[in-house]
Length: 121
Image (cartoon, rainbow, N blue to C red; front, side, top):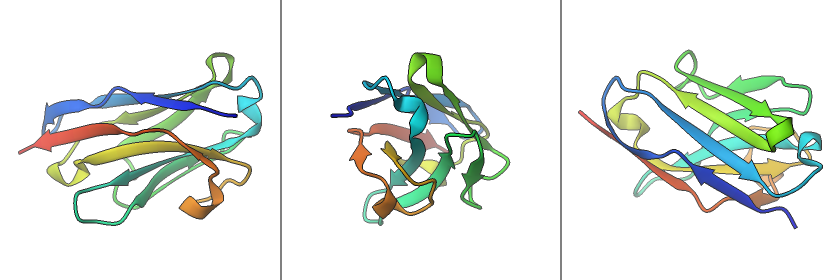
């Protein structure tokens, strides 16, 4: 069974950067698509970014140009580099893996526990 562990969250000021990591406990990690989602208090979980097995990537419009998703299959890890953070980026960030490269949460089978990102103005 795949286990995912996110890390790298924290409290930062607007305009700062953070890099989130998602480490997977499976040797076939490279065969999975990976997505990042986030959920702010009182809001539904929303798509942030995804990366396919072939390294294609896609982003939500709200983070395009500021966030970059990447993966290191040798380390079974996916990263989310977040630059120019805004208070609206405050949320719990989750990574997830699945067989399908998708922006939809329903296509991801396994989820991490989440990491809190708080951006102060």
